[in-house]
Image 1 (tube, rainbow over the protein chains, first blue to last red):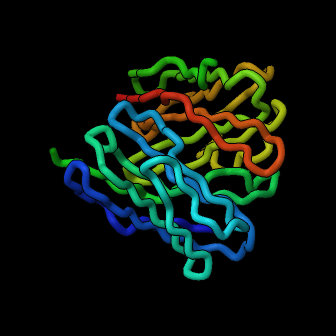
Image 2 (cartoon, rainbow over the protein chains, first blue to last red):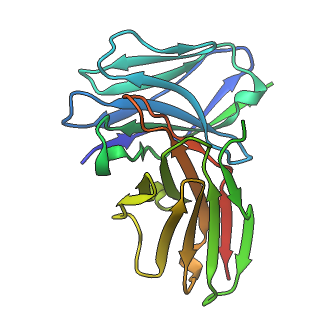
Length: 117
Length: 115
């Protein structure tokens, strides 16, 4: 069974600085998807960025980028130029690309990010 | 376009009562998921529908929980009878199961408190 581990329960960053959130996963599959979701105090789950395992290029979405190391099974999220609105719980998630029962997202335990003004 | 709609946003009920949570997926999406979020267990899938048919209900905790999807635009998650340990945030998510990507979009969640 696949597992996702986020070893940093809490992180803090100064406004305008850069922060990296860590995520590791375990799987025997060679093809899969990885996601980062943001959950602000409103508790809405917002998709931040996604990575397809067969793509070597790291995904980027504006100030958000990932460092995907497939061999190491690592998927970290880098937030550049941090803003107060980035303060939230961040979840790393894994999903198999296949249909049927494996279509569910498997989440890590989350990292609570605080942004200091 | 409207996102995933869930109702109610908050529900407080007494132990033993029946609770029904509702979800309207994004129009055109053909997959629907119910997740539960608790401090102890984090986010976990309860049940997953594809084209209104339950595909994986292995996450449903016990017989007190049931879910239906009578049509493509509506789903319910029912707990009967409710217990204090059912207190959690329940999320509904939907996706368009086409091609490889089919990202899941979440609703705002229903915070359930069972006293």
